Length: 307
Image (cartoon, rainbow, N blue to C red; front, side, top):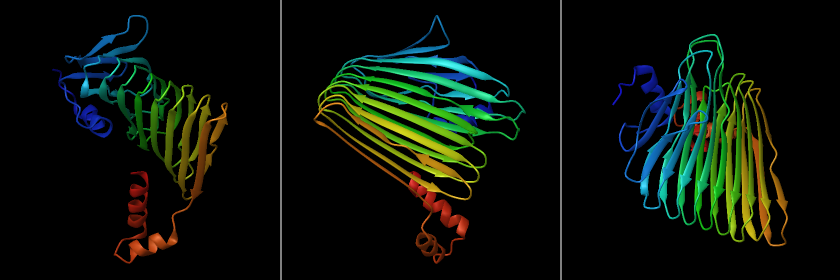
């Protein structure tokens, strides 16, 4: 067991709550795997041809957690990693990922993580991904995650992704291919402030009969930040999908939402909704009558909206 220094532990507490060096885990810091462990049903192996790991989850896995956080704490570093998850038929697993950047220097620090999931039949995967940035330096903190998901028949995949502080620039790309009767649930929560920029592209292809997808995006834009969302659902068979994008805009921020749906089968049923607006004055007034300042009331509304 390695000793985790204070700065790294502080970042881990933000992105990977409950992380311990036991069971199945892998901690990547500044471009290298500093520690990892296996469990009876989950094995982690270092890739031979490129940076990253392969995570093998056997079909007997039931309700187990695997932690794979990444921390970048060196200014001026670009970390590129490829992680592949092989989930056997019938497995039930909770994967807790996330990346945190601590940048106290003057150069850009960046992490590009490409995660690919090969999910077997009748499997259930819950994937949590938190992104976070901190540090007093002038160097920017950049995160560009790519998530590729291949869902087998009758499998369920839940993607819970959060970015709420300190990331100066992000391009988030998610691609999903779905077999018959598979189910996808996506909850994306994001907040930008200052001069931060965020772009999120999600494309879901429902190839198999009976597949279904629910995509919910909630965001808050503050300061002079900008956001753009482009969720896309493609129905290639009898299927059902619902896309919902809700955003709160504040100060001088810019927020754009471009939901897209494509039906390529007569029995494809796809719905999209998008709403952007400011905080309701009546909500603020009600909370202020309870003794809150305007800033405190705004924070309560934002926290409840994002949760």
